[in-house]
View: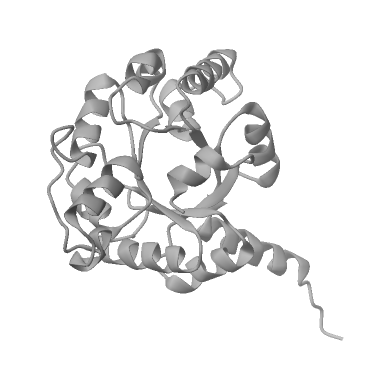
Length: 253
């Protein structure tokens, strides 16, 4: 089952995390821990196209869904990441309808968009599947997710969500607070978040976000978010290591 179908059929919020460490062992550990999905982060980490490819393959092979956040909204990575066979793509800093249309165009096959045909890629099972199946999966089963993390995007939320081909959205509260100088719990940002969730619900679109910890993730799920990333692999390891060191105060006899 692809992640888009899982989101549509699930009665609970899906839990994932960011992958920033280009190592397969951590991806395997996240799968063993029971995460529903991971997001390979090509925007804010050393993840290359090759390490992202390997993370996607391992994650999916171990039963997790695998999304990829591309480096920017320019579109240069969309084709190759889609042909990796990822469950979907997060496009950062989609600031308005024009950005959303450009991103969707790069992720949809003609006549709906301009994605090129790559049937001999992993997404096409290296040419073993028919062209029709490859195109159908790309158009009908792939998540195409704009990250709304600028105030201008939230002010145009209905126009962005009505972009043809868009089938999910993501609220990026971190960059939103940075760019506005407002706290995450500021009434203005909370009102925009509620408007996003309401507009998405009316269009039957899942909405995701990122949280620092499990308590915040539970609150996001209760609020109506369909998928949530908690922390990231580097932070999970670093915080656990720091906690062990803090508690390991050993004195000489």
